[in-house]
Length: 317
Length: 323
Image (spheres, rainbow over the protein chains, first blue to last red):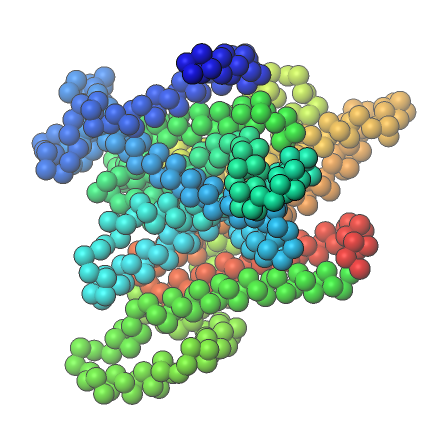
């Protein structure tokens, strides 16, 4: 068993993918940066130098500039916001929220889009027509607009219901993260559906699918165990680019005020908060979360582009 | 040919119906229109009379038809927060958004084509390569960050440009325009530039590719062989043949500018319809929200329909396929 695992590892290490990765310094840097972001997000509570819960904040520490400036103190390396929240710790926690929303939204869109896409490609006929027409219609609207409209509408519906006492004990703040995940995921499913459908139709013409059909296997089994594993390449590519897009969407919605609330901020929320202090000269509240967002989005994007070129030269635009 | 158009019309109508159903459900079932109209001391019987008078006790489909009938006439009732008819609110803010979109479309086109041509002619120059790399990075950044950066540089540090609002407007009857005053231009230039960046990059890359392709063709070689000047070859002959696809694609993307104007308007607190929608969301102003949904759907459906028809006119293959 162990031997088998080892040889698999060796095959992987010797594959085109790994070779092309090792020859692309940009991809290596981007991967390292992404891994650092992931590590920071996962370990946020352990490595944050300060507690950022409302109870441990002291207003005395408010609006400290970064440590290296004239008025900065070493205790707060990147300064503090108005409530005395340490910016560095806030970024660690915010990266966590941004990544959780990003991954969950892409996961949701992927599962929905790929299942509908595979079904459309496999069955064809009216199922295909209905699913792809729906996708086409949604693609009339840019995905960020769809996400924004869904999040906005759900937000005001929930606010209204809890104001009128119909929905008791739930405020928008409690469910904001889930609303965002669903809104961004729903806005993104047509991309997955299109790619999955196209790839499924290609696979259907291959011998192994006919063989499985002749064996009398049920359609569901063929779709899940035979066709799906062969779609992983193209799906992985759009999922990676989709992750960058989802992080951008989340940050944008939070910046616009229909996303993650300030009580448990994401990177976009931090930038929104900091934006109000830009004019009074407190640039660090905005700049550092913005930099973190840029690094995260750029590196995920670069990995996505690299993957696209490495896995499937045909997808190259 | 006919069936193609019918299909397109059918699809557009379906999208509009779906969106109006959503905004109707919002309009009817969220919030209580009666309690927003009357005071605390109105009795339950009086409220019931008002409900009956408003048609709120009618069956679902009659209310829906009623809603669509009103919507077609542009009547979405009163805004709960601004206490004004919704169509007046939209009419007063739509010019701002349209001017913003218009100016950024022009900016994207002019600057994008210029940079595209230059990067194609001097393709091995270091500046051209730098421009291409920067444009790639710029495209993957969120728009609002670029807007914030511009505000910090030009408004906070340099103090050259105002960072919010529309500035001085001139009343042209139905239309309040900010494009007639210097102050208005000072206000619109930063948001318009921010909004156009994405589109500009697209135009740049497209112009560059098309230009490079055109420069390889025989008629350009012939023009060169005839001894025409570089300028004439590049601008009179090559550029002219490049522009058709560029204009088509840029026109297709006008919808994206409308969508992204929400973000730009928020960053620059520019008083257009997008900013109004976001305010309506935070204030739970349902009539404004449902009117905005319908407006956005109408804009996108119309753009798509026009584009489809144009494709049909331009590309003869579509005509044979569907008949």
